Image (cartoon, rainbow, N blue to C red; front, side, top):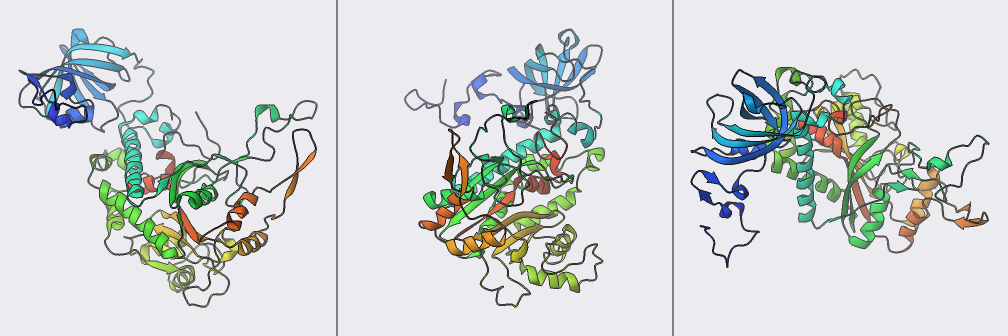
Length: 517
């Protein structure tokens, strides 16, 4: 009988409190649900009434029994099922199956328990001869040509579970800091970075016709896929206080490197009523330390470090990945260094850089790698602050001084976070909240600050604000000092997992020249 009386029994009570046994048969509601749960379940007596769903990873056929390796995405390890030969019809690699039987101690050394199958049902057949995912080693390049099937590879499904757990950890962190999660638009009329590397949005009807004419535009002005949620987050921050979002962003960069995607996820946050960039950097540091400390000892992270010899050649060595985690979890505060001091340190080094470090030019990857290795001793991340105004975005607040040091030119209150090996993963700044200063900055960056004329639905001219007028309005009516940051989420996953390229951290990567499905 139930250990809870009918009066006290509730669906939300602990799963463990609802265990009921009838001899060696367990109620379905008390049984494990996933392969991962079964692999952790080690009853002392055989248990009947077991039902497991999953996909066949491999089959080893013998005269009387077939040994099936089953996975369902919940674990990098497979569950072994022993199937009588007469029940094994249709059990081929890639098939979706439902297996019924006994959960018993295993006679082999691969796992403590195994499933002795009494009935096997094929729910989705698979032709093993044509199924492209085989048990043998397959290179990342080959798997990228199969984005619709690649997640079935055990390590790739583990990586996707890790993404999910990082998102959950970040959500808990921001909830603990009273940040409000928001949803910002994908389509926008504003180019946040002002670099012009945007994808334009139009309908098929707007394509040029044989007669040379084009249909009326769907929107009244040019519209793009967003390159950043920042500008819209600033608007929301004036209504909600501190806000954050994790959303897809798009860059039409013709970059074919392991660190760039055309579609990627950015975690962005804005803090209202703050006039100190130190508080923003501290938020970034606390956030990443929280994620690392909370997830370091989880099963998923441990699974990512279990690799075959061949797959290890495509990954960063496990000891190097562990050093990255330790660096994020370090108790001491991460080093801060100004751009000016960074240039001085680069010049004073004995390194032979391909591009000579010069004040007024952005840091190259080789420069960032040196700074992360030497300022942070190759362990902790490093904040580089107060970059020259000349190559930074228009919305960044001009620095009153460069921490009291003379500089060859104007700087802005901004920072990049550099991590060992991988370089920059976070960028942030104080935003220019004063209208006149923002207008001046826009002019210096060649951005139009006047209104434009646009035809309305009747074809007559109608005055509308330019695509940043609404952003200027935020400064006209109660704009407090504020600032924020953006984290390259896919880069963070790449850094913590040891995957060599950002293309392998997302399920369906898009990069220059490639959008396969």
